[in-house]
Length: 146
Image (cartoon, rainbow, N blue to C red; front, side, top):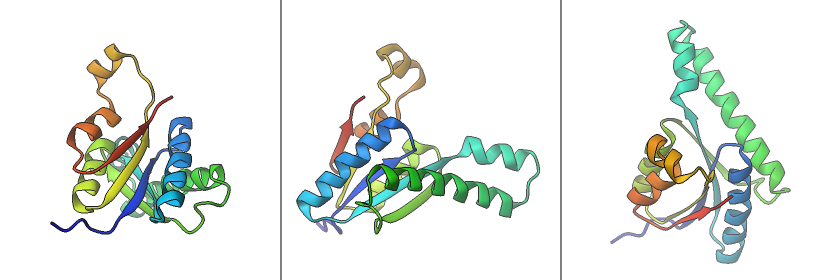
């Protein structure tokens, strides 16, 4: 079985939890010698609003790119230059679904992500991105808590 190219991928959204996960991912990348990759998912909810409002596709794409740039820049700033050369992966859609699809398509990925720390009731009723990913991941996942 092909293990694919080994890499450390951190799911970024600009939150304090994802910035903490990015620091853990950078430590793992340093320790293993594997490349660090930054992954962000522009939620459909943001771009759908523009589509429904009748914006041109170029403006929708620009909004997605702006989201990615903001998230990647915040992550790189939090890492103090440790991720300046990191590959940036920007996807669009439901975050849990897109991250799971990325993991399935890229064997050898060690995913690192933050957890918001919702209560058990809120996680059950709303669902948790980190919980969905852990349940469906085909490779190693490190969840960094609040």
